Image (tube, rainbow, N blue to C red; front, side, top):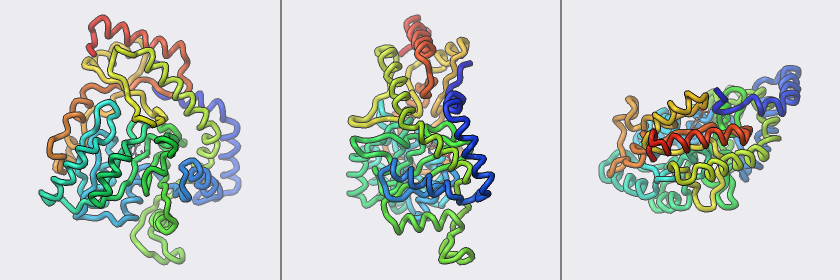
Length: 378
Ligand SMILES: *Cc1c(COP(=O)(O)O)cnc(C)c1O
């Protein structure tokens, strides 16, 4: 099998500098909140176009910390897509609030503003909770429709927490991910566009007081001194070694975004007219965390590609509102038809900056011939 995401080619480009960076941490010994962490936070904030980046232990912690900072609690309703990784809704449930599931838009597969609007109205009517926040997800690497979601949020008095776990480095117009919402959470899980060699995450914010609250939550709600606690918090810090790795990976990141774009364009051109292709929002620049097609014979195509040593993945086979721990939470009034259809049709293809043209053309040819043979219908 070729790799679905090739982390070894990336490693080969920076191996010696990563080794040196890790060795430096081992030598200075500040494994927790060492100098690399604050250096990384400065660079991340610069990338995101915000004054404050607060790194943390995972993307899930980033979401939880943001919700805690805004005091989201039992009795509150937070609107989330059902077509996402579980952590988006999990973070809401972890703070005791009620996730309300919203549908996505065909093509972009990000939150449908009309479904959000209907869900907020139903929430008020049915008393599911006090509508407080919405978490749009930048699915597969592209920004959600922040303008349309922002219009609903402003009218309804909701604040926006962007789940940018898959989209760090992306833009909407001239605005980088991190600046599109008052609070943004991202993840540095190894398979994300910017990944470390373990777990990691960050929260981006525009407000200095809020950044201070996030930093306090990250360390057990620390107050004025170490054993003074101003609030309930957690052990949410990013390891210094992971910060050192990320600083080295950031040196490649702009180039890797270009390479991802080139791979995506080749898929878009090569597969045009054969299967449903991902659509990027107008003015958006995706970082292509995934390249996800959709077709009726998804499982047959996946099996066919596997026999030719081409791996694929299904993100996501089962919507969150049909998963046991979330099945009792409310759903937008017209249901989630686009989400349900997508779960049966999506297929993510090998996607990473180092996918060579010959291999990619082989993947494209295999898909075209399978679709033409009628083995897999569009
Ligand atoms: C990966 C991911 C997360 C969680 O990130 P972790 O670092 O794995 O905790 C949250 N939301 C989305 C959409 C993700 O893809």
